Image 1 (cartoon, helix red, strand yellow):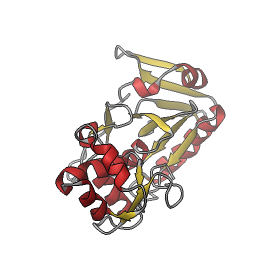
Image 2 (tube, rainbow, N blue to C red; image 1 turned 120 degrees about the horizontal axis):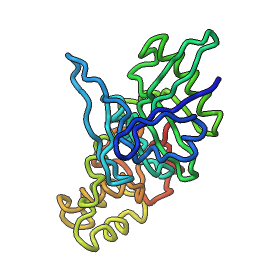
Image 3 (cartoon, rainbow, N blue to C red; image 1 turned 30 degrees about the vertical axis):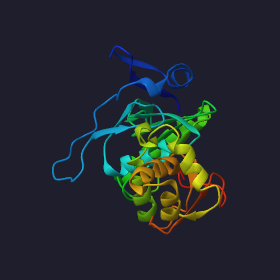
Image 4 (cartoon, one colour; image 1 turned 60 degrees about the vertical axis):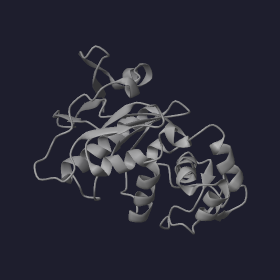
Length: 248
């Protein structure tokens, strides 16, 4: 099965190219969406922009489910760049019918490979067409050493915790010079969140820096349980590997 890629070049012109060549040469993370995310009347959340702490740039997001997955990937230290809908894939079925699909999300990894993904709100979202397209796009990615996934919705508690920490992802939350060092020192050994914040000084000043450190994995806490003032917080690596910021 031969695949073609369709995308917009840096000046907004549509380009169609053999998929294997485009994947090797094109920085999809730098491209705008090849087609706009649809705005569906009646939905509580529509298309918008996600500010990426990884790149310092905005990423187009088409749904609440996609924004949640962007949150997790933006916190993943193996991800170096993100983009929304930067490429359309074209292929022919065994009967010669032309098919196309635009994966919702692109993520570049530190090793140069990439993830194309869709972010369904439930396993059967999109129906048979989406499931058939997923098989084709997975093959296209496997052919070049990339990965395609229909990302599983995050657990509600984990999603809520990541959403909270994401509110402190911007560098401004590191606070005044020297504050972050004080916060990290306060949690050199695991202790209750509020105890460490109070040890630094005024919790109103310390807490944003603490949450910023948790977002950036400078400190660790179990995110599979609700965040609260008595949750244990410790240094990076404490409690084993953090499994909450990838694309599982």
